[in-house]
Length: 255
Figure (spheres, rainbow, N blue to C red):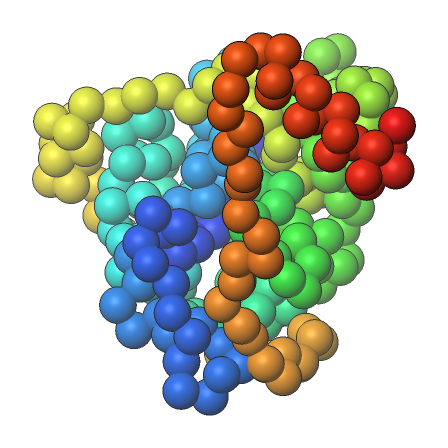
C-alpha cells in the first residue's frame, strides 16, 4: 500500500490580463485568477490516482492557500484522491524555494513513499519545484517522467530526453518525481461529481512556517513586451508576389 503525495501548484491564469505593480519589479496579482498548472500538475494528480487504482494505496493532494485552491482540491477528490490538504500562508508572491521549504516541513510528517509534482510551470523563474522539494527532503529526484510502473517489487519510470529518447530507470523509494505526462490524459469529471465531492470530502488546513524567500533571483525591473516590427502583406498575382519575395531575400542577403 503506497502512500502517495501530490503537490498541486497553482499559477496565474494567462487568459487574464497581467499587469506590473507599482514597484515595477513584480506582477500585480491582487485580482489574479489562480488555476492548477494544467499541463503538468494536473498530470501529476492523474498519475498518482492511476498508481493507487493499479497497486493500491492512498493519494494525498496538497495545495497552497490561494484563491481557487478549494476547486482544485475538490476536483482531485472527485477523481479519486483520498486526502486534501491546504497549506496556509501568503503564497501569492512566493518563489519555488520558499514553497519547497514550507511544503517539505509538512510532507515529512506524512512519511510518503512517493511524491509527485508537475515538472515545470510558466512562472518557474527560479527553478522547478520538484528538485527543490527533493533537495529539501533529502530524497532522490527524477524529472520529465512520462510513465510510472510497479512491477516485481521494483519501481520503474520512463524519463523523456530531447529528441524523443526515452530512458527506463529503476528507482528506490521514497523519491520525488517531476511528471511531464501521465500514462493517460487527466480524466474529466462532471461538475455534479465535484459538487458531490464538496459534500463528502473535507479539506484539512495546515499552517506553513514563515516563508523564507531567499534563493531566488532578484528581479530589478519588469517590462511589458513591445511590438518591434509588423507583418507586411504582399499583394498581387502569384508571379508578382514571388518576384517581391525574391527581391526581399536578396536584400536580406539570403539569396
